[in-house]
Length: 157
Image (cartoon, rainbow, N blue to C red; front, side, top):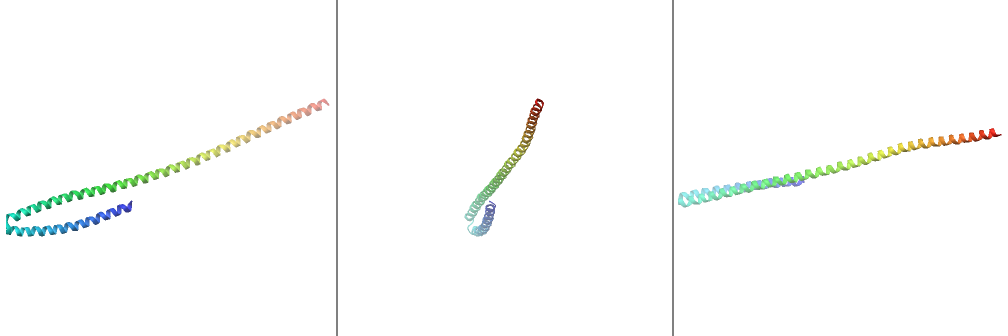
């Protein structure tokens, strides 16, 4: 896109230079024609005077049309360049937002995974404590029953 803008600007500059050269040549030719017509006016009088006036009028109209068209084309090119630049900025902004969104999703998955691991560790520790206490309690009860049975047996003998 930058290359397109550079090439467009280069083309515009080249076209402007060519236009200036053509304008200079046309102006020189026009001035020569006017000089010739003035000379002829001196010779022919009123007829040449009318021709000069008509040529000057035509030249003025052509210059005005050319000026308006040139301004219109320049404005159109500038607006096109602005739209392309804005589209490029919007595309870049969208891509950046997508990257940020992916990074947030990745971070969220990592934090959920970490939380799940921590929960599992705590749960495993709680379960181990419960099972250890239950085993100890069960062993103590079995020992008490065994001791009570042995005591009873001893008392009976």
